[in-house]
Amino acid sequence: MSFDLAARLAARRADNLYRQRPLLESPQGPQVVVDGKPLLAFCNNDYLGLANHPQVIEAWRAGAERWGVGGGASHLVIGHSGPHHALEEALADLTGRPRALLFTTGYMANLGAVTALVGQGDTVLEDRLNHASLLDAGLLSGARFNRYLHNDAQSLAKRLEKATGNTLVVTDGVFSMDGDIADLPALAREAKAKGAWLMVDDAHGFGPLGATGAGIVEHFGLSPEDVPVLVGTLGKAFGTAGAFVAGSEELIESLIQFARPYIYTTSQPPALACATLKSLELLRSEHWRREHLQTLIRQFRHGAEQIGLQLMDSFTPIQPILIGDAGRAVRLSQMLRERGLMVTAIRPPTVPAGSARLRVTLTAAHSEAQVQLLLEGLADCFARLSSEPNHA
Ligand SMILES: Cc1ncc(COP(=O)(O)O)c(C=O)c1O
Image (cartoon, rainbow, N blue to C red):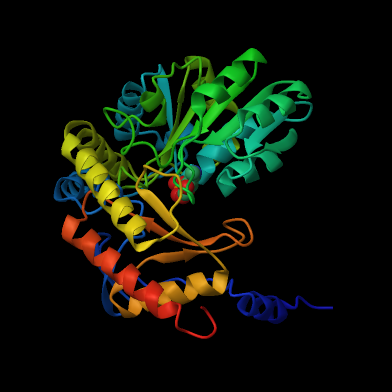
């Protein structure tokens, strides 16, 4: 007996599901160099265009000079440094909650929060299109795990009837592969009516959503009682890396005691926290970034509708074009790349079978002229694809 990895890989290729990593040879931004070729990219999550911002880079550089480059230890030993603490306070302020706790990645924040809050005898209910890290967290928690229909408060209500023990309802704020937003007021109502807690992972909402960029909770004007557990990630609109959970004093103290992905890992480099503090300042002060992004989103949707592309119900920077067949999505992505445009094809199991798509993301660093180039490229590639015998 041996592991037949070759057969597994061959099957993945045959299904058009084989993943490859494009090699980025430039900083993140609209104009990138990938595998040696200059491309105009519409696929990163740097929604506010901060990943390569000179002031953020300078804050990182100055932070490294002051604090060194390594976290050195876990937070509970001697890795919790001044910049980490200052960033937690700034994130608590951004979210209007008493405390925030920094994690090294969003994946770990989600694992940490869910597994610290529920276990055997409890219940975790999740939107069926939640991010993989939330679904994995629910499965790992040992709690009874159930998924409700996408963004459907009625379907949630039915499952809440049968819930036992402490019950955690978990949803993405902005759904990462679809771009639509959770119906948080309805979900919060159902959860509160049954004494359950609502946890929202707003990885894609912080930055683009809300009057001050404080995300989906600000967008809907909800209170900390509506959303007791709020997660944000720092590798998207903040342009850096890491994540946080924001909530009550008791919540954060509980995570410090019980969240294993918080306890048993080295803290992020303090200089990274210095950089994130700077991007948080820009996120809060430079409103033009959110406004420009909205202009681009409107321009893209209007243009794509005119070409007859099948868009999803999204007003966020995530603007997927539904294709269906994985092979067709990959072919379109290749054709766009030959034309100097980079848009990633997203295929199962990241999205449900038969719903492969081109995931277009727009950022404040793009210009209207660049969005126009994308629209022209899409029109041309869709027209050419329909004349290819295998993909018509
Ligand atoms: C909704 C959502 N949550 C969590 C994560 C994980 O965050 P991180 O990349 O910081 O691990 C992602 C994507 O990366 C995401 O899209």
